[in-house]
Length: 169
Image (cartoon, rainbow, N blue to C red; front, side, top):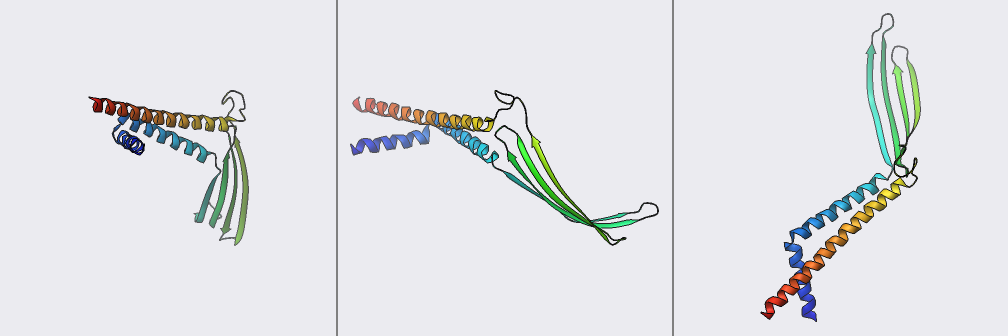
């Protein structure tokens, strides 16, 4: 019984090492796993930061030249929605100093953006679109994994039968 299990393990190693068909299916499994990981990653919130650490402007309009120094910083948070849309919220703070007038100007801003495609999926506003896409990708990965495992078992059985036929001759 021990020799049968060691024979099976040896045949599995040989099949894994020498079967191009199995290599192709395992490559497909890897691709499906990468696509699933990407889909999960895409559902996470994304943070963006921006900054202008320093800017100098020297404008010379007729009658009143202006020299300013300025800086700004901001951030954006973007979240994918289950409806295939995105919601973004951003904040920004800009400050400038007019050298000629010795005056500061502060400019805070807040932005909110909603992007929502219509007629994606089976309804005008599919509320489970993201979940459905993730489930489809999980099924594709599961199917590819089962195909690779099935091929591996089939090749091991075929090789065992060939070995048996060879030994009986």
